[in-house]
Image (cartoon, rainbow, N blue to C red; front, side):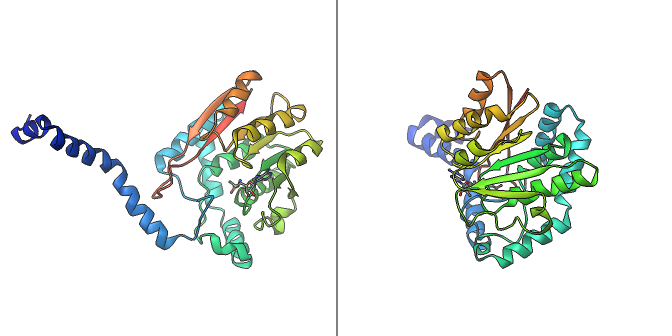
Length: 272
Ligand SMILES: C[S@@+](CC[C@H](N)C(=O)[O-])C[C@H]1O[C@@H](n2cnc3c(N)ncnc32)[C@H](O)[C@@H]1O
């Protein structure tokens, strides 16, 4: 050990300062990112960002493990979504048109939703339900996957739910031909829903009990093939608990945002 370090370590206060300074190096970069975001972004909730290369790779491996498809196939679906210029232009146009668009950025970043997209491309579901749609970024991405499936001969329909009557402004044009929004409380909408659900994405009221209730409500509409994606699994263990209680497998993918201060959310995946 170097003599200076030896002295620093022996004196409690100097050692304290040295340790705190070292620990803070893990977070200092975040303050620079927060400042940059303060100037360059217009978002104040439901933040969007790209994923790091490593996170994209982990997400691809996770989806591959659940769907039993190969890694390269999954990656190809990620790039299909990321390179969908028509979809990106549509999102920009609708953002410009909507008064709520002032809270959205001009860069389109799907983050973990790339995983949602890929489940639709692989499963070819007839019915996809997403509870909680906000602007409708997930909605149009999921509908774009359904449109690609349709080109390949597999029809499917998207249902989003939201309690906010202004939610879902991105779901317009050709994307709306394969999708619709059920406005009102999500659980009330799910109680009235009568179709079998192939893919269910929970992203509405983020309280733990509400999340669990959504899973219980759709139980009669599920089969062993139904996949549940939980957007709340970074905050609660409700999907893990629901999976254990109903004999389902559960895996959690933790996303890592690229160049963003937000620590990231994840995807809880429940399947048989
Ligand atoms: C995190 S945002 C959804 C983000 C969206 N899934 C996406 O991909 O960008 C949560 C949404 O849930 C809605 N919400 C909250 N409580 C709800 C409830 N009880 N029923 C239906 N929607 C609800 C909010 O209005 C909000 O738009």
